[in-house]
Length: 99
Image (cartoon, rainbow, N blue to C red; front, side, top):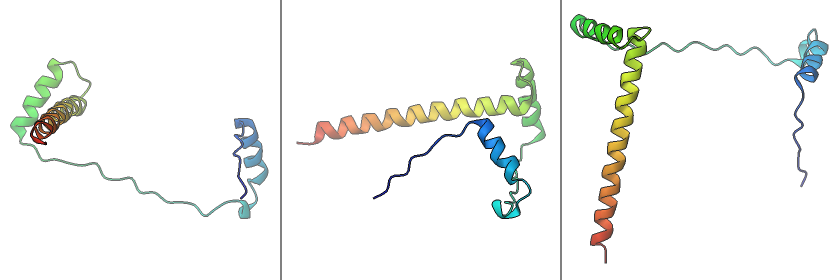
């Protein structure tokens, strides 16, 4: 069985290969077209947006979106920690009841 070793090319070596093959259409694969995914949108009431904007300014965030992202990330971290704690408690409880 043959083993294939990967040689890491330097940036300069890669550049030389690309320049040498630039005009050779057979050296290139067909172009890949990628569509940008649409950002998720969540409808909020005007009152909620105003309250969020107030707290974003209060916390000196660059934008309401940045503040919301931080708040959501913090909340998810809390939820994951709580979930992990409950799982640990259930496992401990189950191990106590097992013979």
